[in-house]
Amino acid sequence: MARNISIKVARAKKDMTQTELAAAVGISRQTMNAIEQGTYNPTIKLCRAICKVLDESLDGLFGEEN
Image (tube, rainbow, N blue to C red; front, side, top):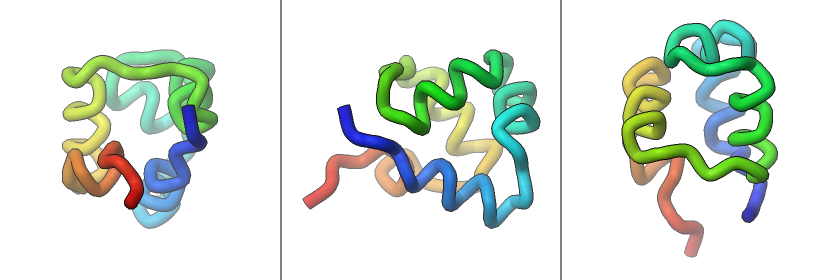
């Protein structure tokens, strides 16, 4: 699994820490870190929650790279 830089960039645009984003979607900071590192594959429900908090599209944050 590749690192998810898109989440980190979107989080930085919102001036949010991993802890703040994790709390907003109801997971631990460690899980958020694992998602960003690409070592944890989140459920679609969690992906949508992250997108909603960051005001980003599903494809924008989790879409396959060309």
